[in-house]
Every structure is written in C-alpha cells, then in structure tokens.
Image 1 (cartoon, helix red, strand yellow):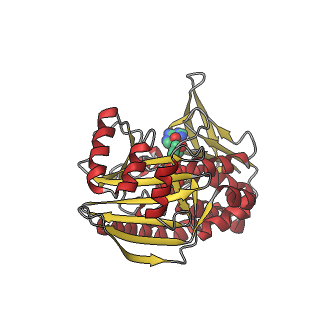
Image 2 (cartoon, protein in one colour):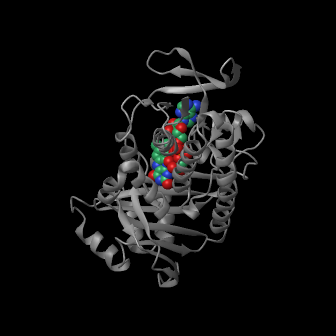
Image 3 (tube, helix red, strand yellow):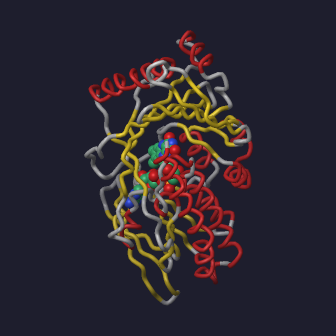
Length: 373
Ligand SMILES: Cc1cc2nc3c(=O)[nH]c(=O)nc-3n(C[C@H](O)[C@H](O)[C@H](O)COP(=O)(O)OP(=O)(O)OC[C@H]3O[C@@H](n4cnc5c(N)ncnc54)[C@H](O)[C@@H]3O)c2cc1C
C-alpha cells in the first residue's frame, strides 16, 4: 500500500504519523511550500489531541513546548470606562497552549527524513483502475526543477487545507463562506525582558495569564489573549469588515504599514489600554481572513479521503481546526489498522462515518459561537 498525502502542515504530518502507526510502510507527503519554516502564532490543544500526540511518541515534546491552559474566561470590557466584568469562567478547561511552529516542528522531526517532499505542488489528480485495483495518479509541479512529474499511489489523503484543490475536484460548486470578520494576530516575545513595565501592567490587568485563555468582548469586536511557552504572548483581535480582496492562494492577507496604523488606531479605541500597548508593541502583526464551509456530505471518494481543513474549514471560535485535524488522522489510522489494506474501502467508510457527523456539528457550533461573540 503506497499512500500519497497532499499537504505537509498539521493534518498532513499527523496523517503520516497515523499511517506509519497503522503499519503502512510507504507514505509520502507532498508539500508545495519549499521548506520548513517558522510561521503562524498560537493555538490550543485539547486533551484528546494531547493524548494522540503522546501515542505517537511526542509526550515529552508536548510537555516541554506547551503550557497548560486550565482556565477559559469570557469577560466584557466597557469601551468608555474600560471596566471589566467576568461573564463566564471555566476552571476545568484542560487545554494546552502551543505555537503552530513548535507543533509543526515536533511532528516533522519525529517522521522518517524522506517522508515530506518540500516544493512539490499537486496540480491535478486522477482516480485510476488497473490490474491491482483502484488507485490514484497525481501530477506534481516540482519547484526545484520546474518540471511536472506523475506520482501514483493506492490511497490519496487530501490534507491540503481549507482551499483544497482536491475538495474542489469532487465538490466544485461548494465554496468557502466568508464569516464577516477577520482576525488580526500577533505574538509578542518578552523573553529578553526589554519591556518590563508593559509586561507588569499586562500581568496586573490579566492576573491569570500563564494559565488562562482570555476572551474579551467589546462593542462589535472581541479579542483573545493567552501566554505560550518561552515567554511569548499570543493575541487575536477580531475586526468586523467586508471581505478583503485577496489572491485566493492564502487566507493570510498581506498587510502594509497603513493597514497596521489603522488597526492600531481602532485598537486604541476598543481594547483595554494594556492590550492595546501589547498590540502596538508587536512586530509584524498579520491578518487572517476567516471562512468556513457548509458541512460536506462525504469525505471519501473511492481511494481519496479528505482530512483536516480540506474536509471541514471552520471558524476559530471553537478552538477546533488543529484538534479536528489530529483526531481525523488518528481515526483514519485506527480504521486502517483495524480493517487492513485489503479492506481499505471499509476502513475509509468507517473513518467517514465516525468523523463526518462530529466535525459537521463542530463547524456549525464554531460558526454559532463566532456569531454570538
Ligand atoms: C504556515 C501555516 C501557519 C499556520 N499558523 C496557524 C496558527 O498560528 N494558529 C492556528 O490556529 N492555525 C494555524 N494554521 C492553520 C492550521 O494549521 C490549520 O487550521 C489546522 O491545523 C488544519 O491544518 P491542515 O493541515 O488541515 O491545513 P493547513 O494548515 O492549511 O495546511 C494545508 C497544507 O497543504 C499545503 N498545500 C495546499 N495545496 C497544496 C497542493 N496543491 N500541493 C501540495 N501542498 C499543498 C499548504 O501549503 C499547507 O501546508 C497555519 C497553517 C499554515 C499552513
């Protein structure tokens, strides 16, 4: 059984782990990015996801590079008086905060070296039937040579993200749905202790920082704020706005100096002063344009299976996208281990029957949470 995984982000690398654990010997991941490089910002891992990562031998790495988020607090801030009132506080939150790059790196480092092929962009796919049964052929553009090569396999795992080429191949008329807001994001590193006063005032305003995920609701917006391992503060600030025009190959919009200055001006009116100071001090904030997708009716077409954001793009409000990707991978691996490669159709049907209803509900729940907040 040769498995071709398309995408080398969290879902793709998680699937590679799950497939190797299921006994698959030949797994390759094709990733269009040319190299592994630091990117992104913070995310929260739920207990089930941490358990799965531990089963793949990553327990120590999780302990070393994440911090526990034991409290989830929703509070509201009056824009005029800056008075804060706690609306809800869950002290059994039990998530762990990590940086996307730390998680990506730990998944990558634990895989056999030749698993991920960087600079390999899948440009088309085809399902085939030959003497050995059903299979897939993919056309791949190789960045280094500029050539297009053909790769075949018995199974194709589409982990190519929310703008998935492979999903569009099977459901061309189902489009991403703009959520009506974008998220400004940033990470402030205070490990060099070069802004002690600002950090002291932030810790005073957010006394549970280091173990709490803060949601701050304000007029027509809200923000998210928590600490990550290595003295890094992660913030998100939601801006309700018309859908930005962008090249549809990334959901991270390019921002210039003027857009950042405008964002600072807005944040000064809305955020509590401590959070505003942090937003202003953060180098290279970026803007995520947020979409989800009406839940799909299927994840499997013969020997092609969708996982992660390719299967269920979601709003960030349920803290689900990375967790869903890793759980998808684990369930896929377990179904394949249970039924074996001889009964791969049954294994894929089982994966779909387990994951499709749950992820569909989570996408709709996240959409609703975003709408409320
Ligand atoms: C660089 C980066 C940084 C991120 N940072 C954060 C973060 O800080 N916080 C957060 O919550 N989420 C972040 N995300 C998103 C997060 O990874 C996902 O929402 C979630 O983990 C699901 O992951 P995924 O692998 O399904 O999708 P994605 O993470 O979107 O990965 C899809 C991958 O497929 C690759 N790809 C797409 N099309 C092709 C093709 N045709 N051929 C080959 N490869 C292809 C993409 O380059 C990408 O690496 C980031 C994603 C990326 C790619």
